[in-house]
Image (cartoon, rainbow, N blue to C red; front, side, top):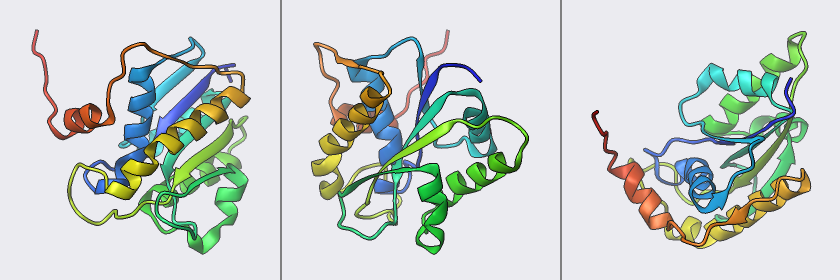
Length: 182
């Protein structure tokens, strides 16, 4: 296991607020200087590959949605053990997938990363659209601040770049992908 860290944005950008973890990871990647020992990953389609992160990194931070009781836009932080112990409250596909990968890794005979989840209660994950609801947009800065705070507590200090890439631009780029052919 390395002494490196990973920040993984989890979700599905095709279902409105469900993609907020991916957007948050991308926002941080584009707007902050990233230390050499931090890898930022779009974990939207990782599936079983997520397990490798739990085995290769010293600590993995996951940004995602949560189905914990609360109001839309509320921010929560919890450990892998707290996530696993939530039992029936983990109702979103994101939570189920992460918990399954954590449970599989915990029975393997390998060292496992420390895992911390930074999650927001979504407003709506049902509509098929690449966008965020107003409630989640309004709370998005709090999610970024809480993620930066979690990173800082592990001695990962990210410095904001001079020129900001807006959340609107990131949402637009994900909704309208382009590919450059060389």
